Structures are given as C-alpha cells and as structure tokens.
Image 1 (cartoon, rainbow, N blue to C red):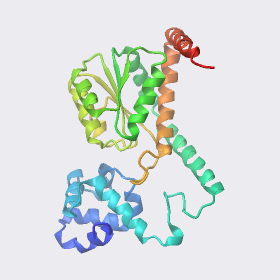
Image 2 (image 1 turned 180 degrees about the vertical axis):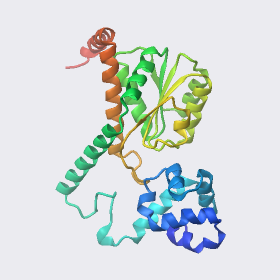
Image 3 (image 1 turned 180 degrees about the horizontal axis):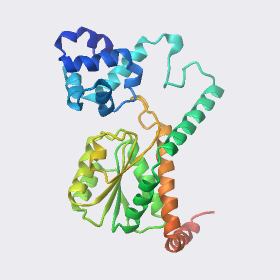
Image 4 (image 1 turned 120 degrees about the vertical axis):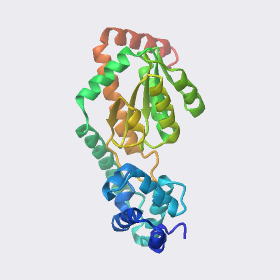
Length: 285
C-alpha cells in the first residue's frame, strides 16, 4: 500500500481536508509533473500553502514531501508496462546505446540552454563583487551538492587563498556559527530544501555574512536566506539524485563566476594562477 501511493491517495479521500483535496486532485491529474516540482511550486499550482502540502504528506503517513515524491515515482514506475520502463523522462530501458548517448547529450545541452536563459547579469556581477570583497569564502553543499562545493573550492583555490570547503555537515554548521559580516557563503542545493544546508545558510545570514545560493527553484526554503540566487535549469526526478545534467548546469554557473572574477581581478588572479600551477608542475611526469 505504501508503494502504490496513487491508490493510497484515492482511498484516503475522506481523511483529506478541502485544501488537501486540491493537492490530491492535482497529483492524480499530473503525477509526472509533480516529480519535478518543489513543495512551494506544487502549493502554488494547487492554490494552497506549503504547510497544506506537508500536511497532505503526513495524512498519507509519509515522512515529508521528498518521501512523497519518492513513493510517487515508485508508483508511476510500477504502473508502467514492462516494455515501457524508463530510467528518466527521456530514456527508455529499451533504448540502444546510440540513443542513450544522443538523449543524454540533448539533456545536458537543454540544461545549459535553460540555465543561460535564466541568467540575471546584475546578479552575476553582484555575486562577483561579493566574492571580491569577502574576507573568507565558504562553499556549502550536502550529498551530491557537496561535490559541487568541493569543485568550487578547488577552482577558486587556484587563484585565491581564502576559500574553504568541507563535506562534513557538522563542520559546516560550526563554520557558519563563526562567520561575520565580511564573510561569504556560497551554497549549492538543487532542491533548496536540504535541511542541513538551510540551517547553515540561515545561521550564517543571522551572523550578517553574505550568502549566495545556486539552486533549481527560485521559491524554496533556502532562497529565503540568500542575498543572491543563481538558478540552474535542469530537471531532476527523485530517482535521479545527483543527475549529471543538474551538475553540468551548476558547473556552468560556477565557470561564469570564476571567469568574471578572474577578469575583474586579472593581475592578482593571473599571478596566483601562475604560482599555483608552478607549485604542482613538478608532480607531473
């Protein structure tokens, strides 16, 4: 019963409030669309508040919205015919290797194009200014997004000595508690709903540190604590955590920030890049 969430929604109709029924109706009519919506986006589509969606999930005896989307994805998958099993919205399990290669290429290109279309040049320039003026820069991320945070730290670490990143969430929490008004946090979170990252960015914000978040959803719990929001345009379902297309989009934004910073601080950046390159040149055969 837990796995077939669609049947559970139908059978639970009498237990739902009037507002929760709006959520149920939308889910039953557009289950595939829901897989790619944040809790805030779904609430807006249904004309209700975020808390209503959360209560809807609790009525179904689920842990929360992410648990609900996982169960919904499983339910959709189990109802697909064996000849139409899919790994994502684009890729069918019966696709040839050539088709998989082409579809994945198109997915990554689409993610990059969508990200480009959502770029706000003023936000990019303001983000670069914050990076330039920061005393310390911390890159935060959890799970797959922690890889993005480490990549950002590695990239900027070639031209700046004041960048820090750690995958350990307790260390991130402790670091956020010590930040001040001259410091900057750049947080990666595709969903914008990862509790640890939200808490850490919120704590940094309360300490008057500047905050930038790179995420898919403009309206998410994380963006409420961000001075600047940079949006990546890749769709990622609940079974696709860490999908490469979302990371490609985030890497593109990271590259834009790095390149613009390098341009605007060329003399120092070029000098530091030469020094760090020379420091590891002897390590290469």
